Image 1 (tube, helix red, strand yellow):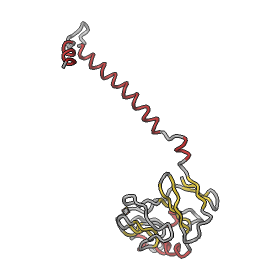
Image 2 (cartoon, rainbow, N blue to C red):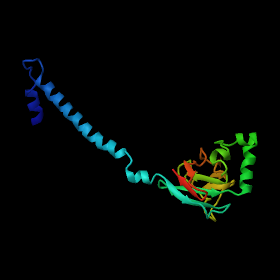
Image 3 (cartoon, rainbow, N blue to C red):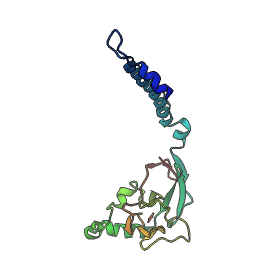
Image 4 (cartoon, rainbow, N blue to C red):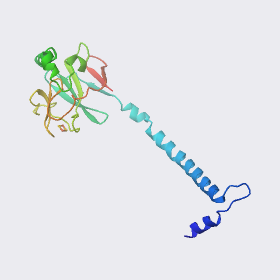
Length: 193
Ligand code: FES
């Protein structure tokens, strides 16, 4: 109350026609503007990736021990990645769908194996291990885990089945398991990210 009363007494027109109350308001808004700039700058500088984060932005994985038919789990940016060495039989099964226009058109997220792997290395299927429905970790990358109706990955949270190319074939997931950016640093080392 005391503050309100003091502002009211300042509401008079001075010699230049600017009310003192207006001046008080303008001064208050200007101070708030300075405050906003001071707060925003640290937020922006915090959003820029630090050297540590940049160093963590790629992951190198030795795949020399992964035999055909096996898969391993790695970690990339704190999320699981599945690295799978497909057998010739699995590749044939995937290509049978890729080369059959009718079957291929039935895929919810149509992508051929050649679009999901690197040229000359179609046996290496590298995907994020994160279900595209609500983000659970599907099973199928470790020995003894369920692989679902299509022999790839199975998400137990709500029953999404992915095939051996990690393409969604059944269940609520809308998209195939995502293929992250990666390259082969050598024949036995993959650099993800
Ligand atoms: S999170 Fe995978 S099916 Fe729902």
